[in-house]
Image (tube, rainbow, N blue to C red; front, side, top):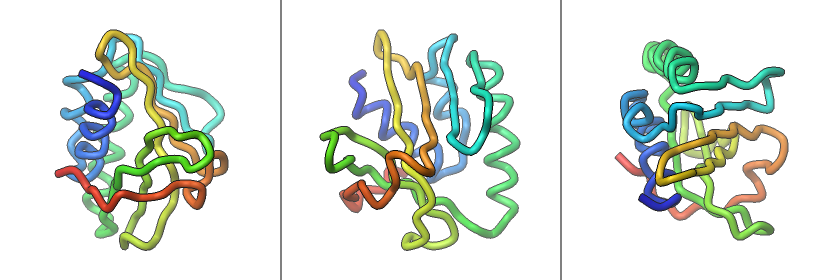
Length: 126
């Protein structure tokens, strides 16, 4: 599985608010980091234990998430452009890394790269 395949599965997980999509592709030593939080989550169990209630909270909020496949303009790098509430309310960029065909890292970027540096493809995997 290449990095674009993994990126689409992560986007699908967010669009469906289904953490189990990530469970199937995550490496045992995956790292999840957000620029809004001071410490990273390390390990598959910790990441899934975080995502499960987070996705449940979003489901119950009435503010859906929209995860669009995109590209960072200056870096020629694939990403996910995240919106919440409406497609136009962009909030972050999600970057991933892979190792041995498994998802090894998820970075939630709210400052750099900023979502305004990304170009969307209008592809929202479901």
